[in-house]
Length: 283
Length: 277
Image (cartoon, rainbow over all chains, first blue to last red):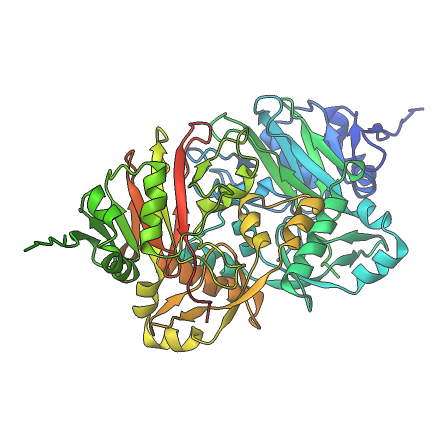
């Protein structure tokens, strides 16, 4: 008689309202048997850290596929789906290095897409010097849940305009006209400030793409968006992750904001990313 | 019989659409006999450069007073020392807003007419001051663009200018900025002279009544237009240079330089003579 012992997810919280460390072995993770539990924890905790898991590129792709629908960004020479290198070094990443400067400010990925990506998986190949280049995360489910009832009611009635073009002004306050036009061509959408997920949970939809609360005066709108960002990114709801080589972090893009903290673009910091397709629209 | 020798203004154009160099001696300038001609030239050229004229701080004030209503920035009436060392200048963070195109005094009923800047200590690199002629920029706009924008109004606010320096301020900081009242100004200023200039810059937050996306697009387009090569001049400083600009018909900005370099400038101002209209 054979005894099958079911592999369970081993995890511990990092902070009360955000982040958990996952302690299973690489083999256990790649087997897919804990995928369902990882998905549950991801939604519950916002950010999951796999300390020094050291996936190869192929393993990171394979692991990503255990969790949902792989969102292809890059393909290797054989046409296979591949990881996406993330660096500010323009020599390595000439097309997107400038665009990534917007990632230094709090944001949600893909707010302009019909279904923003569910999650990103980022692994550190070469960290920046200690004290620079952490990744910040803020739990926008927890930030919503902790609002007083009157604020919840007020915010649930708001619609917010989002555009990638609005992020441009964070790192290039005087863009040229052609650059702005290219960014504005990506789109501009109206979204609810409070996302009522299919699960019944609610989260705040803010970040550097949010430029105007519909129907509000310019600076009243800016004041409320400023308040919301500061509220959501306060210590209680946020986490600044200091990378070691081989660390992998998954975050729930639908219930967190994130940002890269400043680092020297020439320091060689290199991360690789995979993504999971979104499964629901912001409504 | 007495012989009076009135010295004539000696000037040369720097670029066709902005800037003139004034070649008269310091004594001729301080004598005041050229003041009326200098004022006329200032309005036409936007920027007047006095290469290595070497005004002392007192002479700078005296020269300024020959040209109009001297507007002191200091209790003593002396020229203001501008240095960006945060240890000696607590408003250094605010001054970083000057790295973006702007005019001075959007919050005032009557913005200052002009400023004169002299260089005392140079930065090892950078620190140029750039100017753009907003009279010329208006005059050269295609007629249809002129018609489209002539009657628009824009909201100007310190919060807008500061967001360029600090895009994610704390809520307390943001509220501090909002305490400075915002101001609605015409996008096109029709001066008493009949000439028109564009009223834009880093304080312009939005066009009244326009969708935020289109508003931002128009403001960026206008700034790009007004600051293009033909309408703008970049001044590389030598110690002793004085540069005067018409604040009612130009934009200006400083280019970046090492903030700990001890770069030191002196500034005087002329009081404004007409409100935005």
